[in-house]
Image (tube, rainbow, N blue to C red; front, top):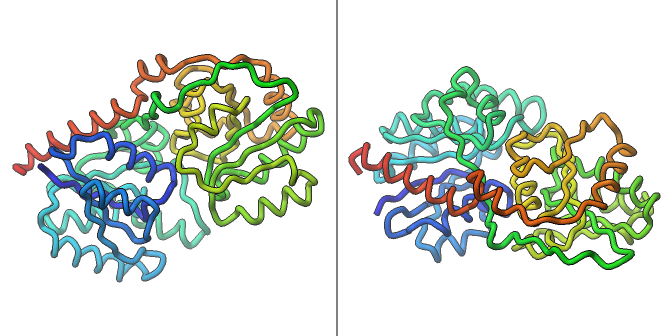
Length: 358
């Protein structure tokens, strides 16, 4: 059995972390075991330990500063020479992990791009861009989309392997029963962060609700802007029509009941929840900033954010009339089934371990 070190900020219910857990659960752990280097405690920690994984902690760069963060990484790799494969999922900060892993003699260093833009303020962006320059210290480049590869790897983006963010097509199953008369449910899944654009989504929903009073909006997720968005919904007179569910352990039962899925993100590395919605057969309306790879079934309607709330409302109301359909065969054929993704990653790790003499 080989052990692979996955480097993330914390194993909570974000898109990257949930994807990692979906992959981990489906690997043959008698052959490949995943361990995690994190900075924060996470909701998946207990399951990781139950599956046989190890969890190590190091304070994050934003808390201790870049020099202490680098020193902590050096100490970690010096104390754990057993790791011959390191896989970082922190975009440009992951390049610093690659640099220290290279210094420690780790032979297989995988840098994985999950985004197409830096988050944070100007100072944070400068620091990220500085560390991003060390991406060449990785031996292997991964990305969730071509745009994500371009963002992190620049002139060497063509080298990146696209690991498809698969979904569980056995769980995200369409409910083809026509919705009850007088019910119209719009759904969204995403952490309450600026990139997810919840403020605009509420403006769009206000325009929908004005035309269709029976409409309701379900927002699944947690994050620093949640309270602000709840206050905004209250001020807009939408409190009774908008449901904030908080984080959901399993979003599939929620999604299958929705009539339209809306995703007005300012940017996404891929937008895996959009693929989940397609697996549930839901008509989707999304911003044109989301990579085309997410339109696996060819049924997603893309709109520019600049089109404004009224145009988005019109598109959502038009999508309401589209019947749900079972498109899971298309998703599997395109390679976006989670078991396909897990098999691919496991085979990659085993091949690289063999090449490294592990």
